Length: 258
Image 1 (cartoon, rainbow, N blue to C red):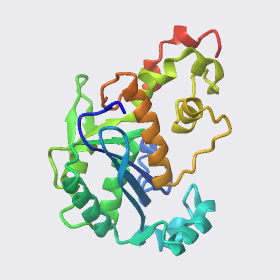
Image 2: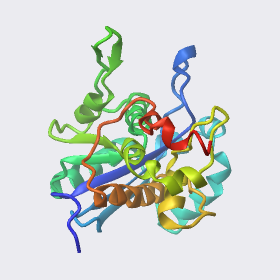
Image 3: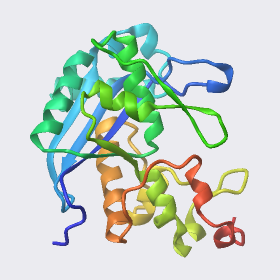
Image 4: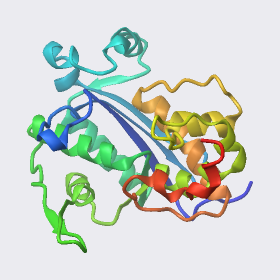
C-alpha cells in the first residue's frame, strides 16, 4: 500500500446550529452539538475515532429547535441509545481530543471548509465557559484588513502550538474539481460556479451519483478523509484554506459546460 502522508493525521468535522451572519454581526449559530473525528495512519487507515454529542448544546431544547438539521434529532437519540455516539460535556470532549492528539503524535489536522469548524470549536468553548478559553485575536492582512486568527485560538484551546490545520476543500479545488469529467457532471450554482461541497466531490470520486451527505460530524469526517486521500494520491501537498476556494478552478475549464 502506498504511503500517502509522512505521519498520523486527524480529520474532524462539527455540526452546529447554523451559519453566523457576519455582515449583520449575528453570531452564536455555529455552536456545535456534534463533534466527530478520525485519526488515520500515513496510509489513510483509521486508527481511532471520536463521535461526541455536546451535552450543553444538545440538551438545550430552545437552541436545538433552531438547528438547521433539527430533523435529524431522532437519529441522534438512537445513536446515543445504541452507544454509537457518546454524550459528554464539552470540556471532556476537548480533553479527549487533546489526549488522542498526544497519543498518536498528531501534527496535521484536516477539515472540509475548515473556517466553519474552527469558528465552531471556539464559539462552543465560549458558550460553555471552557476553562482558559482564549480570546480571539486579529492580524492585519496585506490590505490592512483585520483577519480573525481562528487557527491560533484552536491551538490555544487544545494547548498545542505544534499542530497545523489544513483545508480539504481548498485541496479539492486545486485537484479533483478541475477534472474534465467532474466539471461536466457536477451541478452549478445560479451564478454559474461549479459546486465544490464534500457531497459533490465524494459523489464523483466514489462513483455513487446518488450519495447524500449525512451532515452528522463523524460520518462526514470519514467521507472527507476519502476526499483527502484522493488529493494526496494525486501528489498534492496539504494546503491552508483559501477564501472562496472554487475560484482556484480556472474558468476556462468550465465556462463551456456551466
